[in-house]
Structures are given as structure tokens and as C-alpha cells.
Image (tube, helix red, strand yellow):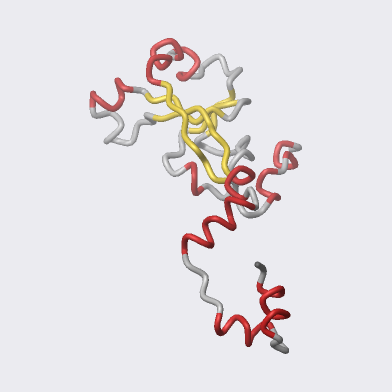
Length: 138
């Protein structure tokens, strides 16, 4: 039952009066999100290549890239990819390597990574503008 249906049923004049008595539990809120399809629309799975050699040798601890997020058109090595404000608009980013780059260390070592592939669920940004391809125009 929605808040407005409950308001009519209880014969309250304002939604605020009804909200005063209505308590939403975390389970109810999670069920509402799930029923609305929020999680299905706002989470995508992305392939993440993990360079085990960089991790085991300690190179990752010294700042060398060790995980590569597959963007389709290239690779992102930004450790905090999930929090990146410009996600998927990476053409000018220092952490971005195009897939067609001949000097790409990722492309040359792709076979070594194949056994270390993982998938990670990544939430979409709240602003659709950050997914715009207009960043690639220049």
C-alpha cells in the first residue's frame, strides 16, 4: 500500500500526517527497490583483468597497475574505478589505454591475464551525463 493510499484510508489531510505514523523498515525499503528494478537498471558487470605477477612480485604495492577494467574500447587502470566521476569518458585520462594501441602492455600481456579474469558489478553513476560519448568528440 502506498503512502497516498494509506492517507486516504486513514482519512488524513496531508501526507505528512500519515508519514508520522508510517515506519519504513530497511527490509521494506529494499523490497521496494527490488520491485522497482533499481538494482537491475543501475548495476552492470564489467570484466576486470588482474595481473597476478604484478601482485605477487610487489610491483602493485609500488604503484604499478595490477587491475585492468575492460571498457570495450580500452583499458582503465584506475584503482578506484567504481568511484570515478568520469567513468567511460576516458580518452584523455592518464589511466586509460586504448585497445588498439600497439605499445599497450595490456595487449601484449593479455594471454598472461586470461587465467586471472574476474567480473565485478559496478554501479552506474547517478548522472547520465558522465556516460555521454561527447567526451570523445575532441
